[in-house]
Length: 113
Length: 112
Image (cartoon, one colour):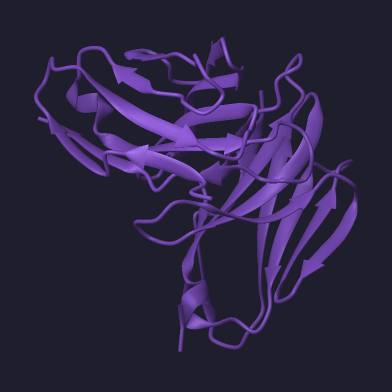
């Protein structure tokens, strides 16, 4: 049982480049989310999904796209990277309601130069 | 949406007890979580409260008062490894979606 697998762990991009952060979970969770974490800002929600084929925007969605074609996978796409997107990105999954907390991936540290 | 407030930083002594407070405002409360995050690592789930009262899990306890929009995380017999950031997260019933919103976290420093 791998939990939530995020790749890559580190990435450096040039301004204007695009890339996809991968996230996969093997716990059959309905809910998946992407957060970014910046110093002093806590975890901010980028996009989330409540099931395959359903996605919605969070607090800071601009510059990012997501899709959820399967229950397991929830990739995050940076369309045209900007220095303001330098951050640590976490993918998380959970069962929606109930007492179980979200399980987080190990994070991707992204630097845009 | 929610407003979640918690202290930025706290310090405590090894072996002592520390209480980390969290206040929140929400229109459709559906549960409160506490997470622990060590530097450079992912957050890990500590506790969940949805009803008023105290939930105890070993050295860690979490309390909730829904009427006051208030929770605290109590850490007993502090150890050096408890130095970490503690995140309060509130789940809201957002028209059928139940996505937790996180506070900015409290950085706890435990010293000998």
